[in-house]
Image 1: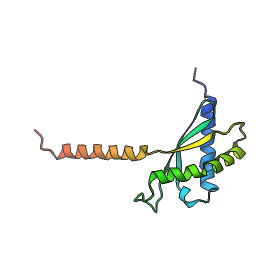
Image 2: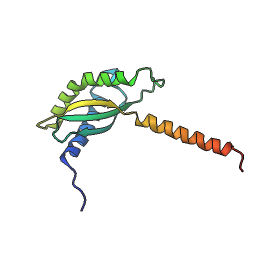
Image 3: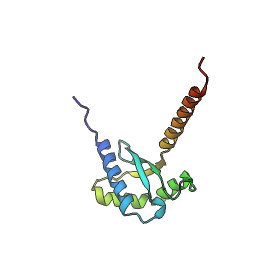
Image 4: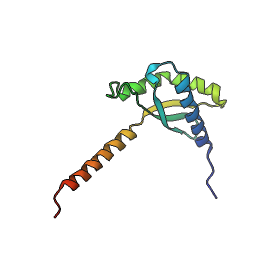
Length: 128
């Protein structure tokens, strides 16, 4: 028998879906463009929603703006985003939004590059 889908997981999915739509269509702040929500975790008491995000700006490939500034900008907009979520979700309790930069993709790419370089070094070695 499959495990049931818990209420907190359903609310996390709703927040993920709605927040993605809000960030794409309703936010005018250019610093919040190209935000991708990677994960949302809601506490059991619905007090907090921890939101992991990444941002890839095609005009800013050198990462001129540090990730702390991106988190700070989202934290500044958190109350406005929470208000919009409250209007869209119709829940009794809307969790306080906490934003964290998700650098898992960067770490994954770095690890992939290290593995590729190790394989290249092994191929370059003369066989014994």
